[in-house]
Length: 106
Image 1 (cartoon, rainbow, N blue to C red):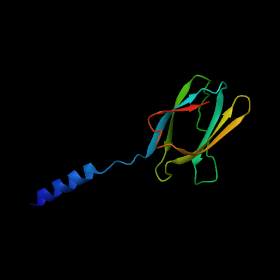
Image 2 (tube, rainbow, N blue to C red; image 1 turned 90 degrees about the horizontal axis):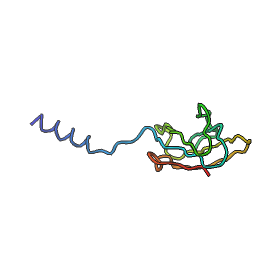
Image 3 (cartoon, rainbow, N blue to C red; image 1 turned 180 degrees about the vertical axis):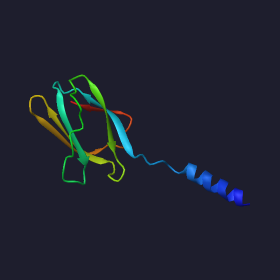
Image 4 (cartoon, helix red, strand yellow; image 1 turned 30 degrees about the vertical axis):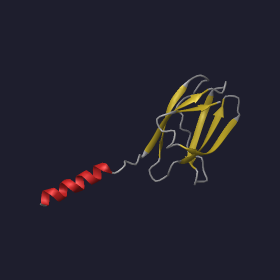
């Protein structure tokens, strides 16, 4: 009987939904300008965080972005800096909803 309880507990744990600790998506630049910097931070925090780009994303190109959701949740603010100096700020982006998909910047 002891082994039956272990089997039931194991089956219950396997059936639990897995909570992702990160969200990854393709950031697609269709803006007509090169994106030179991207800053992202949880919406409930007052700072942007570090630049997450290691290079640039030219118009028509894309890059995979991975953000850690563990302890931060799904709503993030994102700021894009373009080669002409313009900035685009987006608030409350649900990165869990776009996990595995493309996110287009126009």
